[in-house]
Image (tube, rainbow, N blue to C red):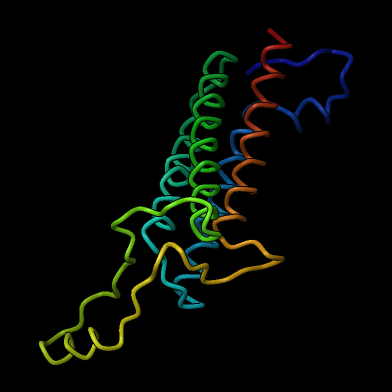
Length: 177
């Protein structure tokens, strides 16, 4: 594991370790995914295509953070993991900004953004009933807002924060090296 300057207090060194930053970024992504699933499964806010795409970098970040924290012992490997996490968070921030922009009418959304359907029912009559009651989710409509921001906007802000953590960890590793 990378060591930090000897004049830094021991508690501060361990609190700022690259391994802990990697885990913190993974935990942040896990919290965002848990929130997305909560809104979908508990509050019944069906995700659109862009909502689902915004989850992809976080799924990858969770796996990378777990693997990176487990095996990356050298500063070089930790730096590579932090760099990859920074890339994933940049991707997520971009997707969130794009989706929020689509919701606000700043950007044109994808042509195929009609939403996702509920799981199929048992028989033909159930299927026909489901077709009549299923609401197609559009990428242009924010299903929920808090303080004026949609979930896409909050994802962009949270992902940008996680990006800053990854970049801060990279800067620390560079100063130590």
